[in-house]
Amino acid sequence: MSGNVAERRRTPLGTWPAVGLTVALLLVANVALHRSTGWSRLAVAVLVCVLLLGVLRWAGGTRADAGLAPGTLARGARWALALSAVVAGVYLAGAAVPATRTLFEDHRYDGMSGTALALRVVVLVPVGTVLVEELAFRGVLYGLVYRARGAVWATAVSSVLFGLWHVLPSLHLAGAKPALTTVFGVTSLGAVLAVVAAVLFTAAAGVLFCELRRRSGSVLAPMGLHWAVNALGYLVAFLLR
Image 1 (tube, helix red, strand yellow):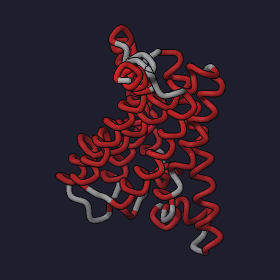
Image 2: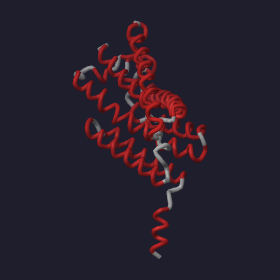
Image 3: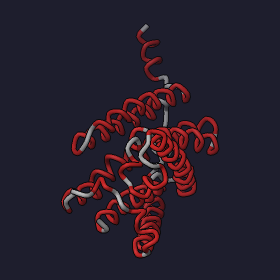
Image 4: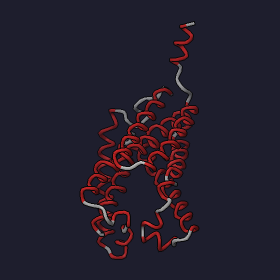
């Protein structure tokens, strides 16, 4: 009897049950992260990462499945640095041109101090956003589906869910960014259209992130691009206030 119990404990979770458990965990995490700020958001993000890696391990996954294989980290870091440099160049060019400078305007940072900005760029974005999202969508979720169905399915599932993940964060996006207010207006319909646009855009970005993960073999590559797009965008918006 004890031998049967031990055997059951050693039996890994099936791939698709693991995917379902991961999605359920992300649903709860999405609400929790949306409602938390500052250090509490960091605590939630770290807890979610630990739980996600636990699900992957339970399913028999490895560090390679999560895009964290030691042999790929150096290559992923090189990709991350190169992509960050590209984003920085694009943002600098966009900020220098009057026609595109307004795209960086964001009322959410009107009263932000330099210290608060530094905390956001150096800590909150890397851990509270980039780490948890990349580990979830290009790490654990991508790795689980990839094992069962390959890169196309892994990219599709990860990217669709990544787009839906951004419904809550984009609820007030149209009112916060003047460039989007000009396009969508301030009506309820405009707010809905802005959310739909944000979901479609982030789903498309998810495809790019998945391809970076596939080509580099490391989740560090999409992490670098993700951080650069978010953090450097905040920095430019702050400097152009």
